[in-house]
Image: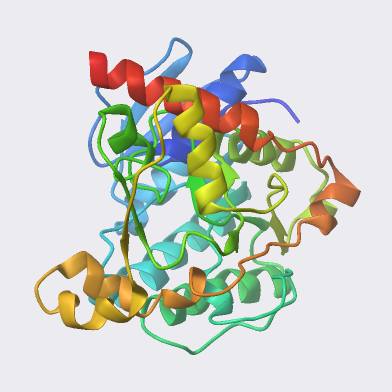
Length: 314
């Protein structure tokens, strides 16, 4: 399909999607509360608060399809309130405009699992943040079942890439290494863990925007490079940076005590299940329907490390 695309949110995945669509010759409208510091040629900005339903519907009317790539502060009390409300607003926008929606989602809604994650894994009632994402998921799924909206969710694990600071492979790890410091990690760095490369997420969003209606009303997992341990991934970054790998590790059992003093660690406690066991994402459904050649870690980590080094020098 052709036509203008509205992208709600201009964080890492919103930026990657914008770049991908512009490279394909599409027009892009970026919608969020504050104007980005800069937008590439071919993109324009409209002001919109995701929690204002009328504003969301008005922004959605700017394009033929829209992408939801928003984020909220990493706090359970905030997520419990805002995620169902925001997704309800986007569902209303899809219904009011008849525009298709691609939701860039995470994997929290599955809760603690020990097997590889598949799109049919039941939704959880666990915790605060996972339960909030599950509640938001039920809203858009119900709207699709009832024929009120056309929505596809693209679910990704922890992501990384050039310029991605808020990531296990971001400012506190590869970014710190680029400054000559030790990489910081919570839990064991020797457990296999899937990471999604942000440009691959942008590519997958573009794929779903061009897909037929039969791809909607369901969730898709973005393809990732074959699983590696975080230590292996960080070692690749160390090689690129020409430095020995130095790791500062916070044992997961300390999240509780330290969380009394550090808000982020308090919020990370309920998410221990994402890094205290092998974390594998099965993307075979997407691979069979579209493509499976995710960016290898060797390429993605190298580009990420070089970007952090350039930023550190700057």
